[in-house]
View 1 (spheres, rainbow, N blue to C red):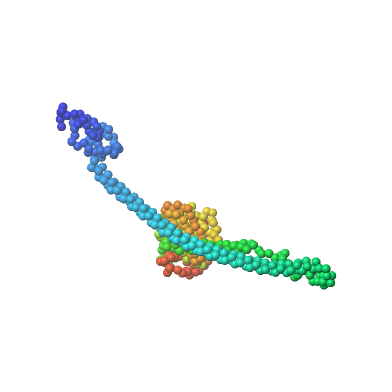
View 2: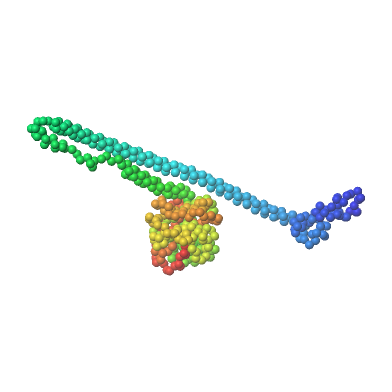
Length: 436
């Protein structure tokens, strides 16, 4: 184009991008993109402020930006899906919490109703005993009063006779009756006789003792009720051969594990533990609750519980929550302990045959139960879980005396997996067990 007409103002020749006045306006202003300043520019901008900047054709930047836009959109959609999933998890947790609360209320109503009935029954029995004792005391008092009144009547009659005799002037009459009247009539010694008023103390004590016994029985039922409740979260645990220590042998279905006594030639796997004699389950959880049971029966040595996904799988590791393990162990046939730091010894009434493991992810709780006796063994509480948790088992060897099978038992779906494996022949020396 030629020099601008005098009828046009200067503002009409300003570039909206660089704001320079053109003496020779161009028809395509915005055909470049400055990556340095992240803005669209015209060809004249390139000769001035953007001369040293990284500029590309607008179409090229458009294509790349559109591709990035698609990727960003996919990432945003993924973020949305994760949050929608988290919303569902939270709603599910709320539903579980609501159901738990309803069950807790129902159970507490039953417990307290039983206690109230027991208290009312004991109170009624106590009242009856007290009333009966009071009636007996009253009957005793009435009998004593009758005896006393009878003696009083007899003594009054004797007193009258003595008074009459004292006024007689007949010497013979006085001497003849003196001996019989001066001898007191037969009476009871009342000095040690009384009606006791402390009727209720021992009765009340027995009633309170009976009430305490009833309360203890109701309290003993609570772990059983809780165990029944958490068994609804039972999962079918399958052991992962890719995580098994080379000394451990798994059944084909992944439901049983035992110490084989010799190191197997297994391929390297980053998920395999190489020092601690453990195997993990295939499936982990990152929310909600789960429960599984393990047949331990005749074994003299075992470790079981859950571990986080990021545990150190290479080298010797002390099992503790600090290192990602929440577990209980049996050593030397009868010594139980919780894998805390330092260890906590557990004194159980009897040796468990089957151990239940319950995890509440949101509550940060891992609990262990003796399934047969319906009793609580130990709980880890107050933790914050941030990654997947996996069931894990460690069958142990105990110098070749502990080669029977260890197997997780799904409460519903894996009943067929019960049973004890055959004992092995005396194995060769094995590596030292991990500290955990």
